[in-house]
Image (cartoon, rainbow, N blue to C red; front, side):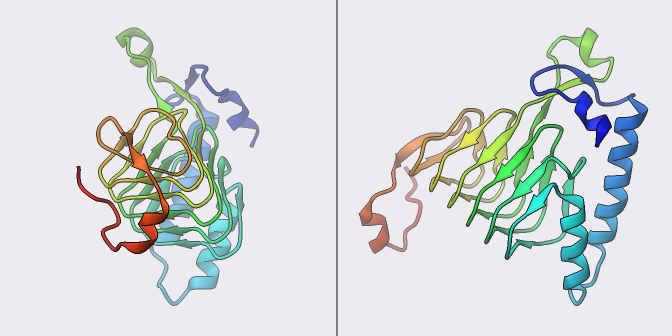
Length: 198
C-alpha cells in the first residue's frame, strides 16, 4: 500500500494525524473485527480473510481469536505456525515470523515506538523498526517484544519476558529485561520440566 511507504524503518512518521495512514488502520480494524467475530465453524472464511489481510502466510497457520494488528500487509508468517489468543502486532514496520513458531496467549509484537521528548511525541510522531522471529522459536505467554528485535532460530522466551535486544540461537531466555538463561542442550530432550526457574 502506497501510504505505508511513508513509514521508513527508524525514521519518524505521522501515525496519528496522516489521513491515509489512519484510513489504512481503520480498514484493517474493520476486517479484524469481522475475523474475530466469526464462528469457529467458519474456518475456511476466516483463513481466507487472514490471508487477504497479511502480507504473506504459509501453510498450516493456526491463529486463535481474538488477535489484533495495525495494518496487516507488513506481517509475514511461515509454515506450521501456532498462535494462541490475544496476539497484538503493531506492524508499522515488517514483522516476520518463521516456520514452526509457537506463540502463547497475550503476546505483543511492537514495531512502533515514540520519541521520548514531549514536543515531537505530542505531534503524533512515532517510529517503527522490524521484528524478526526465526524458525522453531517458542514465545511464552505474556511476552512483549519491542522494535528492532530479532529472536534467532530455536530459542525459547520464558513467559512474562520483555525482550528489548536480540536473542541468540538455541537458548532459553527470560526476564525483564529478557536475558539469556542458558543454552538448549540434548539433556532437554529427557525432561518434562521445560523451563527451570532460576
